[in-house]
Length: 307
Image (cartoon, rainbow, N blue to C red):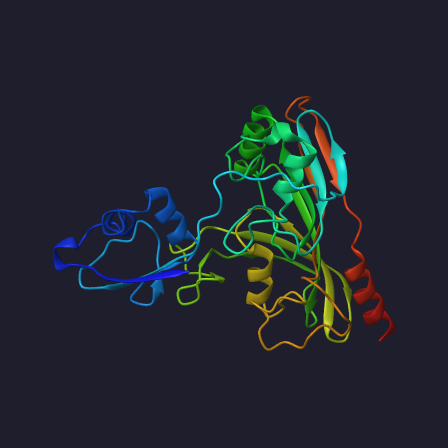
């Protein structure tokens, strides 16, 4: 990790942060700098801001530059839990602990490397470093994810996500007893102003709209088993929204700091993408897929029910 500390000259007042960085760090491309800003690796006066932020002049800008992920991916013969496959799409049940695509600190063992080994034609679909990826799951979240195998499928699925017609249902075990039987969290999400690895509920105008619908399935003395449906797809959305309600997901040390560890040995988050539905890019008919609850969550539920 390379770290740079820069000072904004007074005559740069009014310049966009991303444009100013392009001149200050000419060795990095504008696209690379935008990614660094979006991922929280750039702080202005100790705060994480948007690429379009207008500088005032005189600020201190701290930049962390992690090693760049490789431009091309190497296929890896890693087993995939394939739920469905045809000429256009590949639907898999991702295990907790697997990263979707390479990034800082995760160059190998990714889902896309496994998908490339399984279906080499995916290479180049949607981009060299994230071939076929139209949506993601966090490393420690398990469940259903669709990979586009053709440009036609990629364009169709990206459009459906933008139009919010893709259905995604998650199952989660959270801390505390959720009082309402069902509800809606409609709260903007953006990068945390002081912690680059976290997202946070932000005020209107400083985050992107995020909507999560939830329904309680079962209550225990100190936990709740629930269903969550996404209307939008923001980074860490369910984890952030449930933590904002005071009910962080079990196993989530980022948004559940200070909460007790799970009562049984547990890897990952108690969060599973159990249902995925979309219009098939080729047949134009609605397709729906389901993934059973993983063993780690079954064990935890069994323990809570016995308690």
